Image 1 (cartoon, helix red, strand yellow):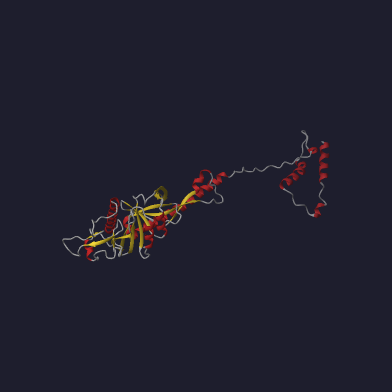
Image 2: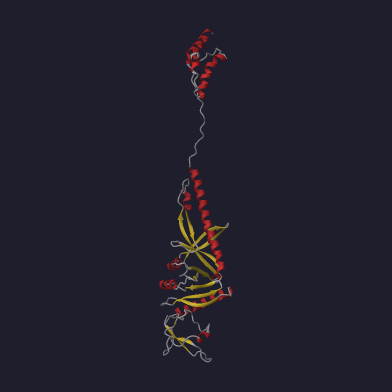
Length: 376
């Protein structure tokens, strides 16, 4: 590693780079990527019979103090980073990529490599952790942040320290059911997301996985809703936070995109659309479940029986009941029917004061009726 430029110096991939690099230790400019010790660049600038190389020491047998297992992992990480750079260049030939180092190695801790992209759409940096990401390395990534460039932190889905599965969530968007993988993010990944870094995962099949936040919620009951019984589970749901997971998300969901989106930002619009669809689906779930809660509330209400109108029965005087053999004319029945009809219909307005004096009294009518019944 060249500490002055922050670039990875691989003499096997770029043998011509020795022509512009100073010889010797150069004030500890070169550092071993595996052990973190200073290196010395040996060899002439241009000699066909001698291959330039980096040495840990000049007077003893040159040997890296790192363990063979750790040294093998570092070499594999360098090869993996270079392969990713070649993949992105093939997908976007106009992009120029250089391999750099974000955080140097610690004792038995892998270094954090990076890809520096220069494209017509702008510059960008893709940080590539390999193995467990320490807090010190997270601090280095945050310290080297440049707001003028797009900052990515790309983790490996097949690395157990980067990817902790947490099941799946089933959603329905655009009338199609889909299952989305969930993960439990590590503390370092949460810190990077809160610092507005674009945290993502890569799959071996050329797939980029972008996260969104999942927040468990409970719908507050409203008037006219019943969430008891079987509807209690429907009251619990989740909401999305995007375009980056917000602080406090219980889990992160991952949306797939082509890996070449790292070099072609225009492809990231598909992720924005997918996250907007998830937010619309959450609103649809809430509306549907609240509708079911209102239906349940209506079913639980007691149904009142219809009230039938009762017929008002007025008793007749005992002494006016006709005998079985007697007959009463219509004229004789009129005095009885008129008061009953008026009583059933309600109080009638009284007559004028001048007409009350000529109105026969009721007891006189009853008296004449009884007299007729006696003479028959």
